[in-house]
Length: 102
Image 1 (spheres, rainbow, N blue to C red):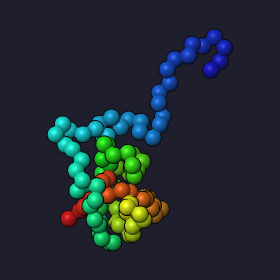
Image 2: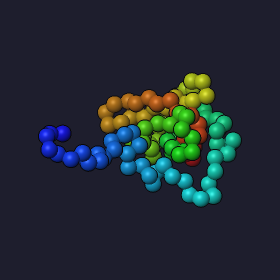
Image 3: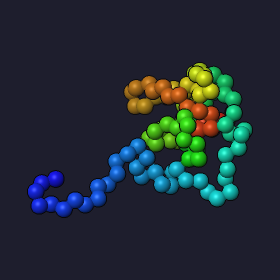
Image 4: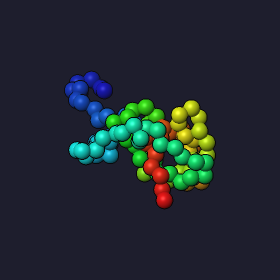
């Protein structure tokens, strides 16, 4: 800021910027214990769907809606891989943020 300029509020540029609709649940939806302990097999295709009521094991908003393949497990999180452009990406995601694809 230069001299003489007023200090106005700055737009947020955090990791959840612009995510009000994506990170909100409809009324009547709740997270069950079965959502938290889902099991996936290696090689299974999953969709990354962020559950807004669970902060633990959440991935960045840019990966919401991506289809990935489960390649392993680390602790109670799953290791998923997908191709982002020409790069292979690996994420560790809790099962509450994954959805099985049939």
